[in-house]
Length: 271
Image 1: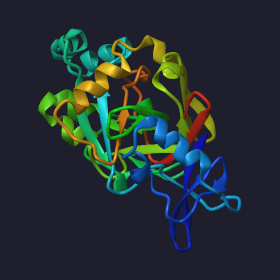
Image 2: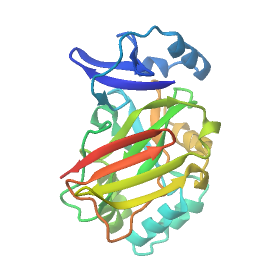
Image 3: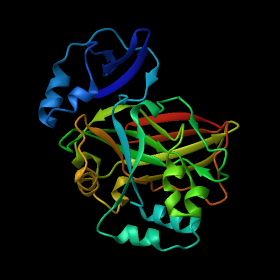
């Protein structure tokens, strides 16, 4: 099953497999339920007309997006390059405790075809394509979506304590196009691809699989939820394994296309 959130004249509304769900349906309410009950619940809801309205990010305003860092070897290499060889990232990569950090609250998140943004006070900005776990209040994986963790490499590279400024700003996070319901076992080897276009031409393209992750989804979720409650569920970006070459920086007017499994999201870039 595939859940999408749409903008209607009377406000946002969810759809299942392209058809409108009842007005009262809420993802937050669904994620308060155990996984088995939640899946059954959404599967039996009646549907209406085809949902043809524009897509919104598949997250509700009160829900949170968190992120995990340095979960792929290439991410480790990129972080060490931007920090001029500082071994803090190598120690994180091999440490028992993974890196997790806050990324965005739901009302700040862009959806498919909505713009992401680069910071004007940074001269080195990159998209970070990620598989994003959607989890319930019990930290059970309900499904996944595509994520773009837009980041300032120059700000983070100056000092690791600048991580919040490098990661959290207007237009820094996109999720989409919707939520594909799935369990964690089915997500162990999901292909992730990214293509960046500028002036109609592809200037970067690469792919990786979640099979290359250093950390398991269970480790990331247990660390995140060990001392934090998520009563209405949440979203966890699982890290990136695709890092463009050092000379690359996003520019206003670029377009970023990210695919994870069956899902693809595109976002224009603005300044």
